[in-house]
Structure formats: C-alpha cells, structure tokens
Length: 447
Image 1: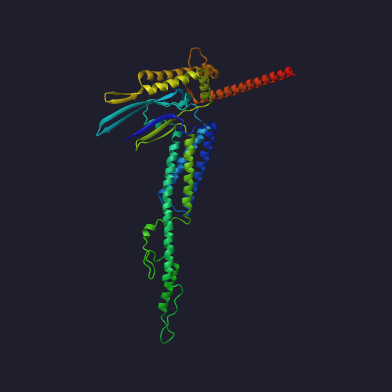
Image 2: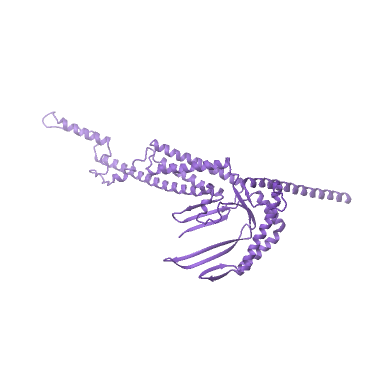
C-alpha cells in the first residue's frame, strides 16, 4: 500500500518575518553546539577516555557531515540568494476543492473504486499568496518531493538524525548499565575472595626436631599469597572455595569491560546532543516553507508547497476586500449552503462518485475566476507603478515573478502602507483639533 500526498499550506505555526529570523538563528546555534558536542565525543574516544563500539563513531561522522553540509548551504542562501527563483501570484477562494480516489483490490481484481471531491471551507478565507513555480507541472504526487529545493529536505534530515541519535543513546545506556552490573560483580567477587584467602603472610612452618624447615615450600606459599593480593580477580568466573558461587560469563562482559576510563561521560554527551537535536527539529519545522520527504522503500511521501506572503500580498488582499469584501463574503456563505445541499453520490461504470451537482461546481469555478480577475486588476496597477516598462497600453502583467521582482514589489507595498498609516494619523489629528476648537467656541459663547 502506497501513501503519497501533496498539499498547499502554511503548516501548524503561522510566524512573522521577525519570528522566522529568530528561529533560523536559534536553529543555527543549536546545530553548532551539537556539532561541538559530537566532535568532543570523537576526541574523547580517540584519547580512550570513552570507548565506543565500531558502528557508532562512523554514524557520528555521517551525522557531522550532514550537519556541516546543511549549515554551509544555509550560509550560501543567506549570503547569495537565488534572485532568479520564480513564484506565481494566486488567490484562494472561500473553499478549497480536493479530489481523492480510493481503490480496493483483492488478488489483482478491483472490487471497490471510489472518487471523492470535497469542498473544504478555508479557515483563512480569501488569501493572496505566492507559490513556488516547479519545473514540471504534471509530476505525480510520488515524485513531488524531488521538485523541492534542497532546503525543503532539511526538516526530514533533522528528524532522521534525531532518530539515529536516540537509538545510539539507548544502545550506549544499555552498555553502561551492563558495565555497572559488571562492577557490582567484581566488588562482590573481591569481597568473597578476601574472605576465602589469607590476609596475612604465612608463618614459617615448624619442623619437629630442629630449626630446619623446607625453604622451597615456604617460598611457594609467599608467591601464592603475593599473587592473590596482586590479582584479586584471577579466579573471576570460577567457584571460590569457602565462598559464594558466582557463575559469570566472561565472554558476555568482554566488550562491556572496555568502556574507557570515564564511561559515564559518553551517555551524558549523547543525551545532550539528542536534546539539542530534538530542539533543532522543532526549530527547523517552525521556519520550514516548501518541505517534504520521500521513502521509496516504504512507498511513503509527502510534499507541502508553502503559501508565501509578504507586505505586497497583504496590500493586494486589503484592496480587494475593501472594494468587494461584502460581496465576496456573501458569495462564500451561499456557496457553503449550496455545497451542503447538493452533495450527491452517483455510480458510473462501477465507479462511485461523491461530488456536488454541475451548477454548484460551476458556481465554485465562477468564484475562482472572479477572484483572479480582481487580483489581476490590483496586480496590474501595482506593477505599472513599480516597473515603468510594464506601462504599455492593453498589455497585461504576468502572475509569474522572480524573487528580485517580488522584493521590489514588497518594498513598494511597505512604503505605500506606511504612507497610508501616516495619512490616517494626520486625519485623526485634524478631526481631534476641530473638535477642540468647536468646544472652545461653544464655551466662549456660553460665558
């Protein structure tokens, strides 16, 4: 079963331009700190302060490589953005049309085929926004992630790194827990060994009939005593006479017993890097725009094309709503009522269709056409003010703009909105002054 989905939206978090900049700075600092922590792990491993099993250092090096690559790319985009990147100006209506198809098969035979067309009410209402223009318009949803810019994969990479660090941290913690149990075994073994062996050197054996004694025998006793003192774990894993039986598998603890001189440092550093990475995942999603992922092995993919908005789209939207807001709101409410009443189910050649009637579908299309006509009027007027070369009679302005043109329009919109705000303040001040003069004249007449 395959799952591929493509959507157009702004995600769960609607952030301002300032908040997005703060999020990018926070993400950069978090990833930089994580890189330093992982480098410290590799350095400590090289100095035998900690000892990591074979796969984990290679995994850490791969994680560091991905982090460095992403940070260098972010730096490149910040210092030299792509001014030729193209976006399309569009507008959404009161509803969004979504078409889906569900087929059920058994032994290669389709026994259920359903086509469903839903008209969801847009929570944002009428919205003017930019959408990135892709190189191919007829690409299926399964290949849509490969049309994303390279930055669109960064959130997915961060999630993969977080899962990898989580698995590595769990493995290291299990090994460290085994290390603690090994130390407990050794401690108990040392106590049992000290009770079962002599704690003072053996005395000279007394020999009947004189001062002569067997010097060789006494030397062997001293050597055995010294060996027991210097090697308290020489009988590790064996049964000790006059002591408890500790049946410990030496082979199972051989990799555990080589965790380095300070084994506690490793799980702490990996846990810190995991916390930093989880925070970086949240920060990356918070600032993500066009993003997605694809796992061909599991037949899973998702693509989200971002609704880019700025001061220019806000100005166009305000102008449309100021001139036609009541009419568009009424049309949206009537369309919602018509969708509820006219949704029907039909069967055509064994395929089940859930859709509205033809009149309601045409009403939805007419609303979209009307909105784009209104958008074209406002966009044409603004572009001719900003770009004199577009001031050609009877020639329309294209909805497809480059990033450089969008930036110029955005600056124009910010200046226009600031000018409008200043004029509004001046008008309010003039009204207040008139009221003060009128009140003063009235008081003089009364006296």
